[in-house]
Image (tube, rainbow, N blue to C red; front, side):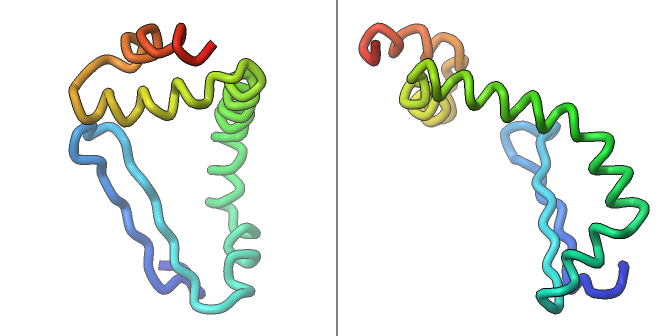
Length: 97
């Protein structure tokens, strides 16, 4: 592990083994900035940049279309009742518009 990192956790989602959360815990307030200067961080950042921008634009589009409530409920209901996300969105959309 690189200096300045106290922990690095990889958490796999139970219901979807293709989804992960990465958690880094730093020792000092200055360590995140030092981490961002490393070659492996810069390679990761460059690799995911287009995906992050697409995610931002998708979120802005949903917010501007006032679909945030639909998607918020659809994620929860889909997880609780094993209903596809799109089906829940289609059912809720007329009630939000």
